Image (tube, rainbow, N blue to C red; front, side, top):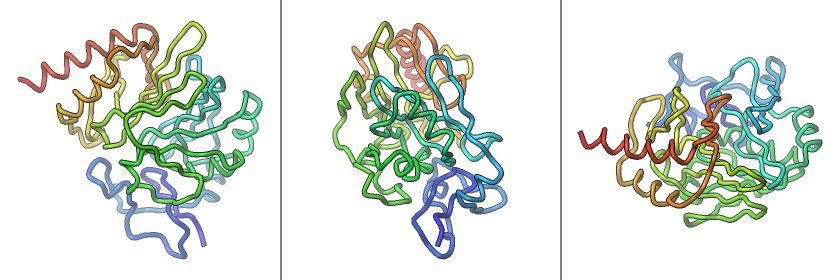
Length: 264
């Protein structure tokens, strides 16, 4: 038996003797099946060819994969809140030890299905910490576990300055993490607000790789949900794709730019 892992998105699927016919995540219209067809690996195979990339992304400790594999997201550690934001496909003893050294992880929070990845494996390696996933995205959970906790509604206070906010458009349960502490406040945006390459704006996408914008009604809901929420910095989904300083103004300007564009 093995938890087969999709090579295109890095998501582990439930324990089976044979790989599924298709990846549950990649067969959805927001993602894509690899150009050479559906392909699978396992965590053990991945660990034999890849390593965890462990380094700071601006002010936050990040965990990625090197060389590149699947979707290139990186997880971020907020030790002040005891939160690991997002998941990656590879879990190593080195990464777990470094997280513990930096203050530990009490809970994992995931923004949306494309980053479910090896979230259950991370939880188990960290001692069985809860994984917070929005109820609206339950159907895309490919590896079930008692550690997955589905939350409902639009806001979930995790404590110690951390709050999850549902910001739909990319997925019905797409979530951002807001944290306020010390002299700065942060918005960890996942793909709900997709930081642009100029790192001065964000975009709002139903599908990033297939270039489909989010519907205006969902972007307006996201705008309303974030109204009045202060944040200095916006962390995007991957290394360096961040807006450092002026994040609130950049997001406000991006809402205006989006609505002007879709209005023609």
